[in-house]
Image (cartoon, rainbow, N blue to C red):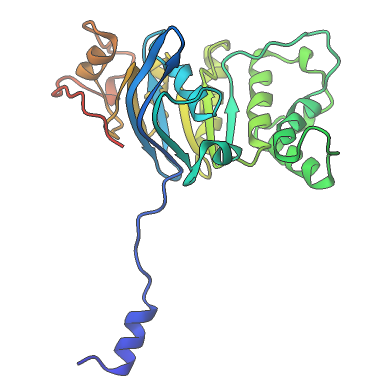
Length: 275
């Protein structure tokens, strides 16, 4: 029989539970009027995951992000963000698109671009508060762009602009950061700097990154999957030749100077997705 002290100790001891997921995608089918693009997608992101998704053009990578953001309704299946439906949970997401169209001659400053990230949290017609400005300043500080806050966006280099767009997404105070090809238009050195920044951000934010750059992302992300209509993801950091073959539908030679330390030469292929 337990003593009174043992009973109290047992009651007071912490209960170890699995942390709640930040993103759950269950049996998702999505597409457009002219056809289905995504088939039976299952994916679960835990807090502070850093997941990279690679795959061929037209494989559905951007469609996946649009569906998570609520810009495209699912044909079938469910997405939950922080345990909530997309229409509610998407406020917890920061998004960095692949391309940002802008007029280089339009006189908008770095500060104003990043402050636009607060509009979705406050509403279009509400005035910005001192608290909003504090969040904008902190977002710029995190990407090392605060000293350039008064610079016109059209005067910045490609890498500097990309940091500003990341800051705009951070101004949302997101739990999840979605990035669609964030380094597609920058040179290799800037690309490396941006990935270093993302690793630092991952210390407190969950990241889901879309990219064609197999060699680079494999050196930074924690886990990686291949998407081509179906998602080949096993919660593993290793890119396998069989995984790429399943996604690209053709044999893929893994170049030695590309991803040597994150590739297995042989791995049994499977089409089973893992949440």
